[in-house]
Length: 129
Image (tube, rainbow, N blue to C red; front, side, top):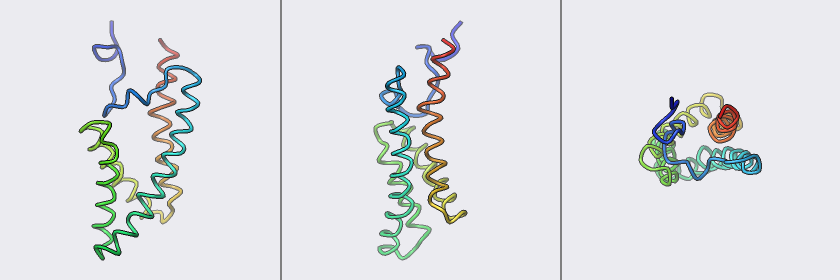
């Protein structure tokens, strides 16, 4: 009895197969990738890019919205579903940042999400196989 899709893999949103670790050494590298992506992407897409766009559009809401769309588009390698999902997440991270007024909270949420999807979940699934 198969637990997942036709290939026996867990369902994911977007094409992230190339990012998924296959062993312990890759898991450590993927954890560093998740940490780097969460911090650097949040600093860029929630702080720098909206600030630059506010100077262009003179509208904070539009600027954060455009930054979220750009955030989604840079994840085009994940396919259409990945772009849509990361655009929505970009909006969620923007709201979290604006609500808390703390970019590190948004970065921590981003890191946690990446660690869960790319490190914790695959590691647990490898353990139960």
